[in-house]
Amino acid sequence: MPSEPLFLNGHSLSLHDVQAVISGQPVALHPSALQAIERSRAVVEDVLAAGKVVYGINTGFGYLKNQVIPVHDLEALQRNLILSHACGVGEAFAESTVRAIMLLRANTLVQGHSGVRPVLVETLLAFLNAGLHPVIPSQGSVGASGDLAPLAHLALALMGEGEVMHQGLRQPTAQALQQHPEIQPLVLQAKEGLALINGTQPMTALGCQVATGLAQALDLADAIAALSIQVSLGSRQAFRPELHALRPHPGQLRSARQLWHWMADSELLAAHANCDEVQDAYAFRCAPQVHGASRDSLSHIEAVLGREINAVTDNPIILPESGEIISCGHFHGQPVALVMDQAKVALAELANISERRIERLLNPALNRGLPAFLTPQGGLNSGFMIPQYVAAALVSENKVLAHPASVDSIPTSANQEDHVSMGTIAANQALKMLGHLQQVLVIELLCACQALDLRRPLKASPAGEALYAAVREQIPTLHSDRWLGPELATAAELLAGNQLTSLLSQHAVV
Image 1: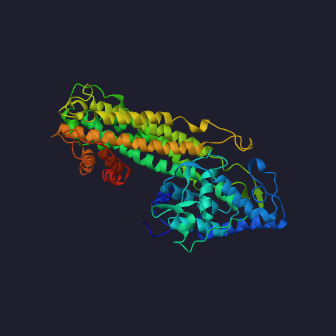
Image 2: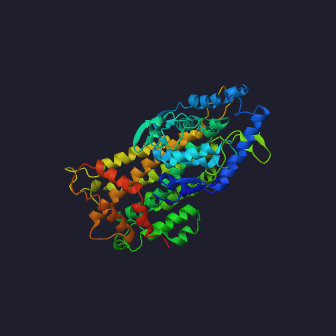
Image 3: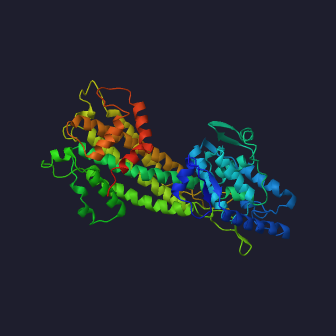
């Protein structure tokens, strides 16, 4: 775990930083952030001292916005807000997601436009650094006014209530805090409850994980496709640089370069260079165009998320320079919702074309001389027949999940909040689809490695042989039918980790 803390200033957080904190890097406040927090809090204190009525400070919420709350009830107002809103349902977010949520919420608060006290942000970071991860249900947000229900569960833990995951155990927050006497539960003051829950951090945290996983999957998809094409006795010619310069979409260019490079010096390609085959099927020949389009989508997704993780998504927003507190719509999750739906399409298509390559590896009418389902004794053995069924099922489910969540909107809060983003639904679906894509790529990779065994003594390209060797270190050749479930799980862990990505970096395109 990195020992040097990440200093939050609200403006320079990167997707790489988010991943580092997910992996355990500690977080601290930048001195400039502390000053910004204090300035915005002073505006709230001035409002209270002057007896002004300001939404979110001394009023009700949503449809109840016109209900003025007396000073002696302001603490109860914030507490009741959290208690009433912490009603999410469904499976809890993974701790990795919760760590990202905590980081992103802190990063918006430190910009000094939310009116919280420094102790609130310090307590949030203390929870994060101590590994006290609030249990946050994954369902219940419509993505405006922010991710209210999920963030309320985060706030509940900071109050010493609710539940946390700590050292692998789910337990009451109060019990876990007994092991950390240096951390005191918060008693929320005016504006602070609302400042904790008005924002897009859950959907954005999920989005960061989707973007990181998609970037990794794209390179792996190129490398696995390169191996599949070789063992299918395909051609490298469709990936020539001078061809792709004629249609210069950036993602397509990168995928084409990688396919061209990762298929270089292949004995398999050389052995049939003068065969009668005129061209390969689309699943092989059009890999740069399909993978590249998903890669270009990723570029836009990363740009939107990069802005969102450094944005103020609160309401109302405090402008310390003028002393104004203004209601606006920065909590609305539409920017994230749209790119999460875009990510879903990108993920679905990568899995779709990978499954078609699996079919071409297994089908004796298409695989250019390999045995059916890549087993030498077909009939007695089924080989990789059923893994293709699994891939087909995952691809089909992805097609259902790819329907855009953001095209739906159901009014809430007595129609005061009459358009919502459904961004968290889209982000949850995208993360699920990423898992499906990884599993489909795993099946393609195992099939390609099996096909390479059947093509011996010919060798694949150096990059292909390195990929093959990494798989064979953990999963042997399939000589006869055996239980493949654990091996698919092992390969999925290999693909989702950093080992294959690091291996490919050793064969990076110059």
